[in-house]
Image 1 (cartoon, rainbow, N blue to C red):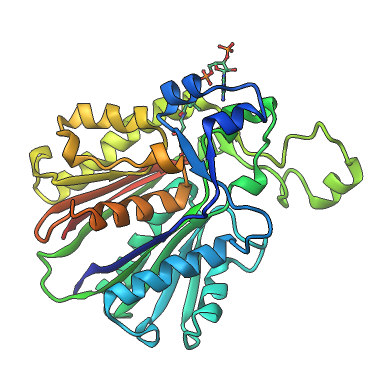
Image 2: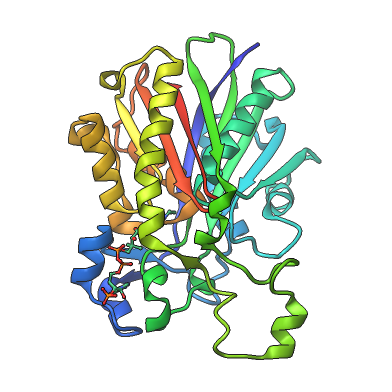
Length: 336
Ligand code: UT7
């Protein structure tokens, strides 16, 4: 058995900055509400016609990660792509990345799992490497939310939160099992699937044929729905549990955490976790202020920025943790 370790990170966000002020021109909202409830000041939204899509942004982030990993694209043995906003209903963007990067015909797997998508994707990659099946795995999280949000006052409880962007990591085999990814922890609770959901188009509740036949402008089923307070309350509990689970599994206490990268769901959630674990400001990385919640992209974007800013050093204990739609949640414990 091997461990895996992250040897390259990259991110890409679209140029187009949308401030809270900009949103208040579209709907009944304001900077004070958004800042106080979420910590978000601005986000990036893909400009129509810019060519940025979930797949193309993923490719841009991946190119940077591969270059920084110091390997050739042909050394990649497998691709895992996490998103809830694929360019097409099917196939998913993993195969688009394989083609765009000109990688030989390696496997490409698409991971759903929404806000915890990147954590799930890392767990998949880690376990393929651990067993010796693959040596180098490219993991991507990328989202374009902006084309699918209800940008009217009706949708303000959701649309002010989400942003677009992509992040990527290259994982490789690590023979020293005291280093790299020490453990991953994944959970789900499907009884709450509809508390944070996009119903349509789906083959269960809202068929495409229904939507076309109804042609109803009041139909909200193709916009994301979130029971915000319920999600918030569950998030703070599950984040704490799954971080604790990872620490306990590795006989670490909370003082061992050098850097916590939480999924950027809401600054208030991150602050709650920081307080609960008694972590100093320099041990929790947040960039939701600039990017909003980019779902599967939020952890790899934050991890890349933290690394670029020199906030992660060799030997550090780095914790990734996420919670979101499903509900699904998870953590990753890394000895960098
Ligand atoms: O990433 C996946 C996981 N997602 C999360 O973890 C998100 C978890 N939830 C949250 O972050 C918060 O629940 C929100 C930020 C979504 C909402 O904050 P809240 O403090 O729970 O607000 P609320 O939904 O209870 O709404 C409070 C009030 C309502 O008005 P009334 O009924 O009190 O008159 C809303 O209509 O704020 C109103 N409101 C807004 N006002 C201005 C909702 N959205 C907005 C808005 N601007 N954008």
